[in-house]
Image 1 (tube, rainbow, N blue to C red):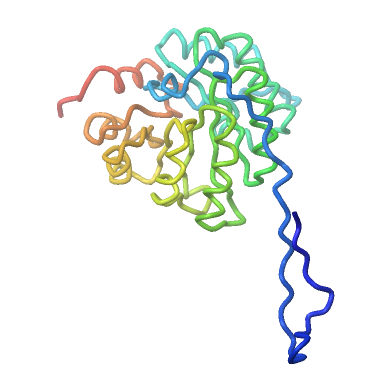
Image 2 (image 1 turned 90 degrees about the vertical axis):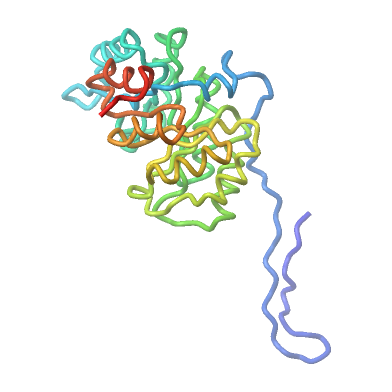
Length: 266
């Protein structure tokens, strides 16, 4: 039901001006969610991934994807022990893709490699409506999980962030990505605490630093380090489950060793 402001903003008794009340309109853009397990992948499956590569997107000279080079890169990740890939993230230049290109690349990755590696689609956006639409499509074509950024540039409130994340979390396993150096706004712990109650919340890719990683882990939140230079200590000293890595594009075997072989003695 809508509650509309009166066309007259005068009090009938005193004749004093008063501000009209805003319309209250129900949220009509709800996600097309399904309660079935997404593509044979549970939230716990995502939570257990130690090495996830933020995969690079190679391009042809005309600007189209170089799928042959991309496939070779994915093969290299698989044979060297990477357990998941983020497709179309910052490293993959998803911000330069149209949504059609974005979803096509996620679908290609699922179709060719989805049985051997978990595919996490970066379907986040500063527009909640776009994030809903892209995430609906991503899960429909087979991605195993979604990566979601907080709304960037046009900074929002704590409640705005909670509302944004809760809307997209309803669709399937989700990793929240906090990188304030790029978004211009930190996702504060109070937001993570509130959205962590959602059963589809897999965890957080955290780039603020290992003090924040330790804080979340002590509170029971699954964390991936977003900083390659800190990921060893995040894993073995602070309790992070693993890393979402850029460096593993080049040396996936080394990053696998850092995540699986135990603490390196210095």
